[in-house]
Amino acid sequence: MLPIVDFLRRRGRQAAGALAEQLGISRATLMRAVRAAGDELVVRGAARRTQYAARRALRGQAAPLPVYRVDAEGTPQQIAWLHLTAPDGSALEMLQPLGWPLDEAARDGWFDGLPYPLQDLRPQGFLGRAFARHHAATLQVAEDPAAWSDDDTLHALSLLGEDAPGDLIVGEAACRRWLQRVRAVRAGEAEAPLREAALAQAYPAQADAAMAAGLPGSSAGGEFPKFTAWRDGADGRPQAVLVKFSGSDDSPGTRRWADLLVCEHLAGGVLPALGLPAAVSRIVQAGGRTFLEVERFDRHGALGRSGLLSWGALNGECFGLAGRSWAEAGRALAARGWLAAQDAEALARLWQFGRLLANTDMHDGNLSFRPGEGAVPLRIAPVYDMLPMLYAPARGVELPPREYRPELPLPQDAAAWQAAAPVALAFWQRAAADERISAGFRAVCAENTRRLAALLG
Ligand SMILES: Nc1ncnc2c1ncn2[C@@H]1O[C@H](COP(=O)(O)OP(=O)(O)OP(=O)(O)O)[C@@H](O)[C@H]1O
Ligand SMILES: [Mg+2]
Image (cartoon, rainbow, N blue to C red; front, side):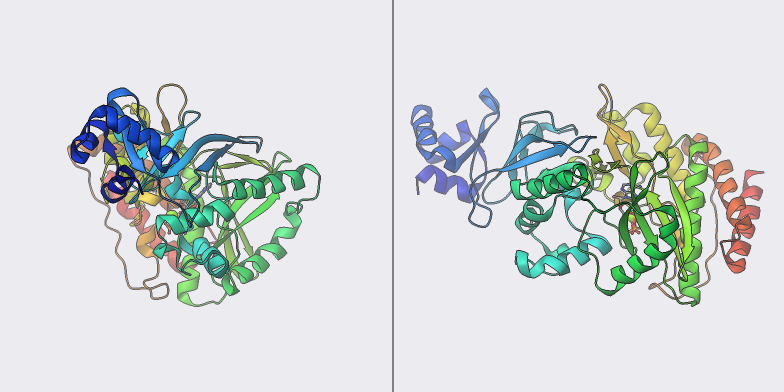
């Protein structure tokens, strides 16, 4: 192995000056060594920003992986080459703008791990675990995707990641699978979307299958039991949906989860009054289960896709504000010019709304962005997973007593709180009156209406 490759393999990427110095060679000798190493090196950044890294193979394959973006008609276009670097990290050679904001190092394509927009493609949660169990033996990876290295993830995505969240596909094999689907849809050979009248039969069967063996697709994260489906859309086009479902027994824990799914649907219904888009949802009750069906906003018709980026992925790469409020997220994003000021204000209202809804689960994966328009690269994606998680059964089944104690805002949060409180009140009122919710939990919602109204004065 050439000394320059050996050095970079051990030390990670280096700028030209530092590299020449550490190898004890002149710039001219360095340039000759770089040329001699050829494809064994990854070179990114122009002029003074040029850096060099040794190329890392993925399971013996040294060639870079193509990254594709699927448009609103379902057509993939290559937007980048993904090079892996030693000892870890990657470099994205962009052929088109990535469409997501990049910090200083990433602007030249360098990432310490996988490029952060690919983090959301990782199989995770309920569906991701089923996907991993299903394919672990073939892919030679662990059955728990949380234990996968970046290389395991890329290996899996590059072979089977054609239907991940958002609009990105990595690797030629995965792209071929996507094209097979496009072909099937265009040839009229794809499975027909579910008709409205078929849902009451189909959803319970899907839920049983998801619980028994898990379904092999993995196009959404989240821990709650769910499956993905296609059904006839209101506009006559097929609509991709995520369907979360409660258990089918009549235990108090199961009943509570069913109540909470209805609450999630009702919260989505009041969010527009807060100036925020929400995922369109509805409740289907069938086969002893309650289903919350949510229309996917990263899928359009039979084949169209659009970009989706979680705050978790963006935060981990560019901010390091883990565990902080979405209001702070909005302020940090607006300060960098990545989010419009009015979107940052909307996030402050959303955070207050969630607190007044007793949503104790507003984690970084429950907030996402879509590509922005014009100069601002991000806008808030429709809100999802907004519900009073305070009342979630503990360990999935127990129902310890919970007390709703809405709080008054600090003066700096008062405007957002004032906007959010009437909308939260409307939520509790609707929940208290909705007969799909059990009488016991409706009483809790009625009491919460009184408590919040008292605070509003
Ligand atoms: N309407 C939607 N369109 C597209 N993607 C969605 C939509 N709703 C949710 N998602 C994606 O699916 C993931 C799982 O959804 P959701 O958060 O509702 O599930 P969950 O299992 O309740 O999550 P958690 O583990 O946070 O409780 C989200 O993190 C988001 O990435
Ligand atoms: Mg969630």
